[in-house]
Image (cartoon, rainbow, N blue to C red):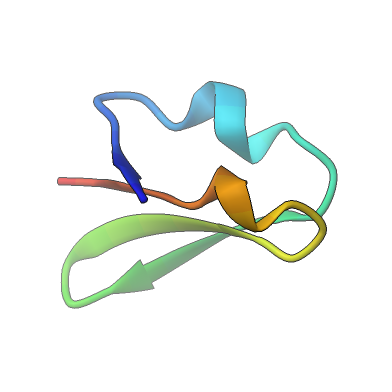
Length: 40
């Protein structure tokens, strides 16, 4: 999982979902599991 300052490039990929957990913003990609990232 990558820690990013901006998730804009990852959330535009197909299969990506933006989820808020424990005050952090996560991107979870069901089609490409390497596209996981968190912000904050």
